[in-house]
Image (tube, rainbow, N blue to C red; front, side):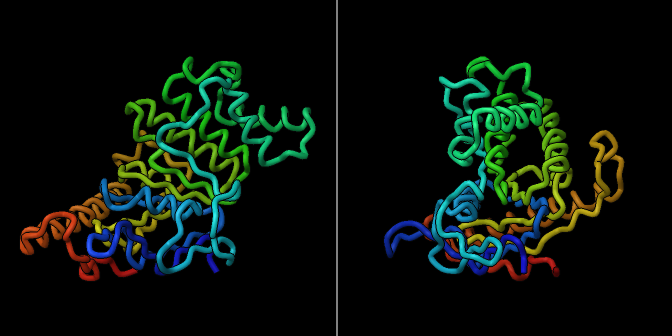
Length: 285
């Protein structure tokens, strides 16, 4: 039995007659302490997938399980890191993290809570900025606070919704390295949503493509067998890295091309697109 499971999950929005099916029969199995990356194009249902995995949204059919029990509502055992930081502007770095810790560990003494919060501030290398407000921090530093706040709740599963997409290339690269370091130091089961194939290969144990929507589903996975720790400075000359990256890009490009051809052949506007059968393009497991 997998640690986190999605079994034939479908969900859609809108009234009958003009309903849009976002995900159809999507299945995913994640082992404990495994790092999974889900890659997909814009509009394929990535944010909906995040809401489903964390209990913010209930599926129309199918089930999501954590340790064999259905996920029916959000909670601190399912941590989310968003794209937009979601920090309280009137609180310091310490205050934002402490607020989360207070909610999850109300029994902690003041000294225990301080030690707990300081641990996670140090983990994301923000000790010198512990008393600064979000407005005094760079985008990368704000995302570190967001990550530390979520980790301080000690979730069993960490779900990250394109957490680095708003950052410049250099900051993004630095935070990718930080994510690897933190994951190796403070092991968690991680599902990261991204549209960056290179990022997925650098960080993940497995990569799962999300097919084109509407009625998107999760395709067969790509296993990442590159040894850890991974050195980004040598990856571009690594034949295994280049082969895997090209396989994923080719697969995603083929899906995109097939979806466009079907839309043109049917002469349909986007809201009226019928479900696309990707079984022909799915890789064998």
